[in-house]
Length: 116
Length: 116
DNA sequence: ATGGTATGTCGTATATTTGCGTCATAGCGA
DNA sequence: TCGCTATGACGCAAATATACGACATACCAT
Image (tube, rainbow over all chains, first blue to last red; front, side, top):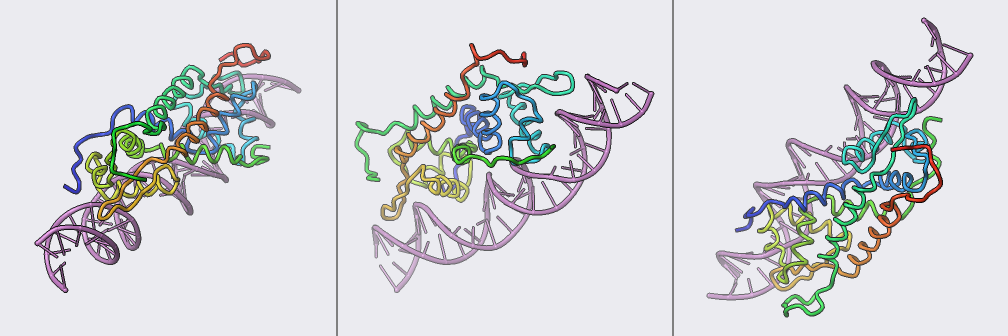
């Protein structure tokens, strides 16, 4: 009985893990914050603000874009990256739901054995 | 000017990335949800519910414990794993703050060039 | 003590992530 | 047209994450 594998992970769990992974690197957190703070969202400008090479920043941008969290529109020579606020709101709800389900102390639940 | 590295990542960004990484795997999301749902939080029981070997689940538990999100108390032969609700609340606030800063559409900001 | 059970640790193999240099592409201006 | 600049794509190396079997430990019941 030591390993049973009765259930698979739910879609909800996989979705949450996917978006969490997008935030699992300081560079990507910083990129999102930068895009939220500044109006000028040019890829090159972003790279200049981060302690990473332009190539690496571009990769992180692609990852965020693949998830749909940011959008990139070509504007002549430069590329304009912007946040996808609709999806961000959705993700915010996703996290809020998770923490609402998980972060509330038992308080007045049924008695249990575990005392920790 | 292509790579400048003017700033480092802030502590806030690193902290958020660290907790996000903890949620970046479906197994760890599932573990937290299990601990929140059930009162019986024995390591073996947890492993039986997941499509992973007991060893792997134990590793994920160690990762969560290292971050402080869960606590493990030895109870005779078995180990009682419980959520650290205080820290979870803190993390919830951390995410709420991040999304509050980032997920709100500009609406009536100063005019900008980018139309996407 | 002895055996059985529940758990963590270690070593290892594979997959993924991260970071960056180099190249290719594509637009802009002289 | 001819460079020049901004940017993504490709390939590679190092680091990290993931998964698991085999072993070690510790506890309980007999």
